[in-house]
Amino acid sequence: MDSDGIKAFQEIVDRSRRIVFFGGAGVSTASGIPDFRSAEGIYAEEVDGLSPEMILSKSFFYLHPEKFFDYYRKHLLYPDAKPNAAHRKLYELEQKDKLRGIVTQNIDGLHRAAGNIRVYELHGNVHENECMECGASYPMEAILESDGIPRCKDCGGVIKPNVVLYGEVLPKYVCIGAMREITNADTLIVAGTSLAVEPAASFLDCFRGKNLVVINRDPIPAETHAALVLRGDVAEIMAYL
Image 1 (cartoon, helix red, strand yellow):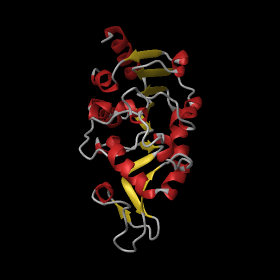
Image 2 (cartoon, one colour):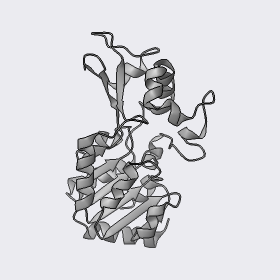
Image 3 (cartoon, one colour):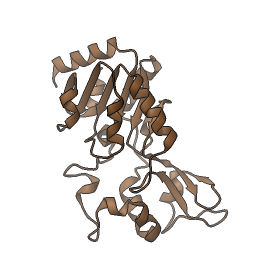
């Protein structure tokens, strides 16, 4: 571990008054949830000649819902996952009123499970599911415990996960809140993300603060503007704060 880098990170956090954390899949790998774009990630393998991006698209959901849900259950739902050291440290920072917001591309709900309140889930949350006909709400277990296409027990409508599929727009008010927090931040921590997905990646353009900190295993373009770059596992590095 880079002790000088950790010391510099701690100094930035100590000086900061409005920290915003922008995280991706690498934040949750220590909780047993695979990332998307690494060699061992979810997107590394096609299924019956179809890319994961195709299967997780709006059009595929409507055209082939049974195949969609089969893939979704196997690859995106991790009911036993628990918050790791990164999630817990962010909760501590929010309790100290240093952390003003978490902007996450993850759909696992672990930031909220850790206790954080100021969470902007750009791509939704697997724990929230809704009947497309009557609007009834269902927990993740309703998807896991169903066979084939999950149906509403009241009206028989399809239960759709509250996650943003390829081809769908991001939730408007979540985006507005996320951009507002990033714009007002004095420190932005970007962690565990390749920044390969738009429009989420362009949210960093809103940052006007002094300290951009990047925590990631692999290099990303945003590093060219960073005050500090820490290479490694997000949970391990955050635990040192």
